[in-house]
Every structure is written in structure tokens, then in C-alpha cells.
Image 1 (cartoon, rainbow, N blue to C red):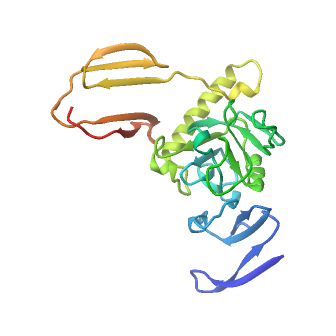
Image 2: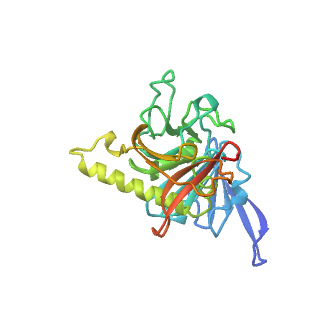
Length: 300
């Protein structure tokens, strides 16, 4: 069934904005806004996904427009504050969906992941054999993208639950090794947590670096397996203490080296801060860092 109503475009000429039911395959000039229950609406669109329309999305709804970028690498950004999943292909946004992530006692972990395993039909081995349609595994501890309940707020046991139809479409454009960034304000820059119609530079850099690591790890293995996309690397931390004038280097929590340092301007309030290395900048000439303040400023 097709419903139409006259609307005006920027040219001033009246046209028809159509609403279609039942299918997601629509002409290039439309973007599909799909509801739970496989109902979809086509919205007039010419410059990419309309974020005005996205702002009106309700639980279970999504926008899907793969025509914007038919080919290229796919990167998925899951924004925990927004409860939205952004899908990029070749750097251009092709889809946005509502989601439901982990509740307070089962928070969805943040970080940069790859899809480790895909199964159209899957049941949880942890939670009473619960169905997890279109499962795309992110960790071997039970975190995955899959179709599920969407109440409009974080309510899962840690998984990223999606509208069923969207999970089917997403499953069709990803593969083992596809990069998935799960972000909040404490782990990623604002442009990654609240991305636009182009993949943010920081996210692009992270995806490119992890993709290289995955490719290298897979090449070194004698035969393909679900573990081929798992990359293990050490966590290196540098703790600078103003109190004792020392810098301590740790690898995976174990102290490896210490050295004296000189703090200039000791009378100034420095506070406590955590700096996380994001990676090279978009042009590769500098390093990008994410800074977080801890506690209140005080005179050290």
C-alpha cells in the first residue's frame, strides 16, 4: 500500500512524499525509516541521512540507506549515551538504528572490537537458551549484536539489541573482522560518541589500525577459525606522580621501570588527569589523546 501527500521542496514545486509499507527496497531518492514489525516509511532525502528524522526515532525504529555508499569497508559505531547504532560504509553513513545496550548491573563494555563470529540462528549459552537472532559476536564473554527487546533504554545483559529487521540488514553487510566501536563520553571524543554523516577521523584511524592488526593476525595463522579475528596486545600505562617526583611504566599492571622527573611550577594546581592514546591523527603527523579529569583541582 502506498500513501501520498503533497509537500514542497526547495525548488518550490510540489511533489509527493510517499509512505510505503512492507519493504525496505526503495528508490535512491528515498531513505527507509523502518519500524519494528517490518513496517517502513520512505522519507525524501538527497544529502544523506536526515538527522532531523533521526531525532524523532522511537524505540524499534531505524533508518537504512545503503545506496549512499554501495561499496567499501563497513565500520559500526555504537553510541551508548544516544542508544543508537551508526553504520558507515567507505566512510559514509548508510544507516542509523535505535538499540538497547547493557543495564547498570550488566554494562556493555566500551572499546574497539571486531566481529568474531556470525550466526543467523543462535541461542544464549548463558541466559536460559534465550534466542539471539542474527548474532554477531564481539567478545567471547557473551557480548554481541543481535535482534532483541527494545524498551527505549539500556536493558540488556550487556549485548547490543537491535530491531529484528535492522539486524537482518546489518548481518548482510558485515563480515568476520568488521570493526565495531562502542563509545561513551569517558572513552571516545565527542565526535565519535555523537557522530555525523561522515565517519569521524578518530574512529577511522582506530578502525584502520585494528583492521591491520586483524589482517596480520589472520595471515600468521595456519588455518581460518573463529579466533582468527582476536588480537591480544599488552596494556601499557605511564603513571606520573607529583608527590614523589617519579614516573612509573607498567605493562599489563606489572611495574617495568621507574625514573625521576622534574615538575615545573609546583605551586600551581595541577589536579589528577588520565590521558588515553587514541592513535595517530587523520594526517599521521601527530598523536591524538583523550584527556579525562579525575576528582577536583587542588594545590599540589
